[in-house]
Length: 430
Ligand SMILES: CC(=O)N[C@H]1[C@@H](OP(=O)(O)OP(=O)(O)OC[C@H]2O[C@@H](n3ccc(=O)[nH]c3=O)[C@H](O)[C@@H]2O)O[C@H](CO)[C@@H](O)[C@@H]1O
Ligand SMILES: C=C(OP(=O)(O)O)C(=O)O
Image (cartoon, rainbow, N blue to C red; front, side, top):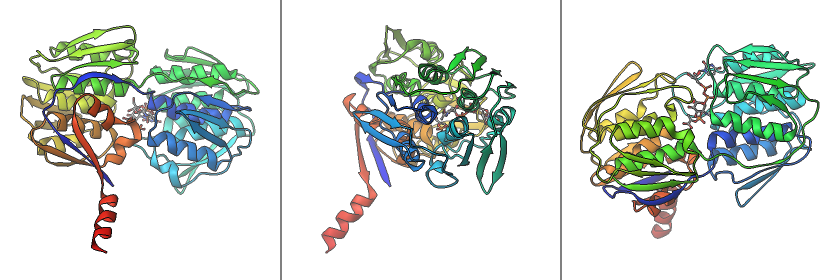
């Protein structure tokens, strides 16, 4: 397993280009299953979640080619091959194979998903939606089996606002008979991106981005060419890293509107944040960071996926901050590692109480999940000495070239592969 090393204390300076959104990409790729002709998704991020989904499409008979980050998917040869085990367990978004295969083939068998371990992550609302559309759903030996004679449109009220359930029900409903209405739907920008792709394929969807989505089923969908929105979580990560290192970074290729909750929190902390057409300038060179309280909420509230990085930043702010995660009550594993680096953080229930500022010291830490990884990378950037981060494979799930992008902003960071070291050692000993 690789390790990431960071020699801290260099303010980030320069321009960083943001990649396409992981959470859109991982839904758009399964959505290609629904088309009866080939689809091209443009400029996908080169991350492990994308590569695994490409493999999964091949496992069900699809032809997939990735060239210059564009993915060409020929879905004509696909069939409903069961995927009860294996790679589906390596990521969360494999659950979208359920909705897409159910929509196209009226049957699917997909193992329960993996992804970040943030405490319980049930998929009961996805299943409630599939059942409402007429599917028989059973859970056997850790896999979900879905089958329907035909899918019929239905009115579905989500008991919990869920990004995954909203998209999954859309995927199944676009090829159902009649009208489906999803009420209390999630409103994340990635949902609009998926709806845009499906509409380009010929689906009839209205209201994506609001809490009521109406889908009139169609018999067939055809492939198309589709770009992806920029990653708002990667954007936020670089904004927070710029603030934490007291740097000045132009975060480019972004949609500033998606970042409002983050921009306004950083301003509240004393950071200069200037929104431009498709970039955001973050300037913390003269900032005296102030403590703030944060509550994660569904979009357009503060995203849970930036809570962990924000916690690191707040260790540098004067005063006491309370960070409450209303989406995932257990998303605080990173705080144990931050404490080992010198942070003053207490976790009580679903809140972290952070008192700062505290000087952090580099040490050996482990990323337990993707955003714990980015929180620790930011901690490494502001620590004295060297930080060694294990669990880099989690970071690789969602950040394209994170280390190279940080280096281009002036960070001193390098990556080492244990297996490579071992091979080198063995060669030397021969
Ligand atoms: C691949 C992807 O896009 N992942 C994102 C997606 O995850 P994911 O789609 O898994 O998250 P959801 O929006 O579904 O989850 C929101 C909340 O609803 C609960 N819930 C969800 C579904 C369900 O059937 N029952 C239920 O109780 C979850 O436990 C959680 O507390 O949205 C999350 C919330 O913005 C983000 O952190 C993830 O990065
Ligand atoms: C929780 C996340 O991802 P996933 O849902 O794919 O595990 C994330 O992107 O922060």
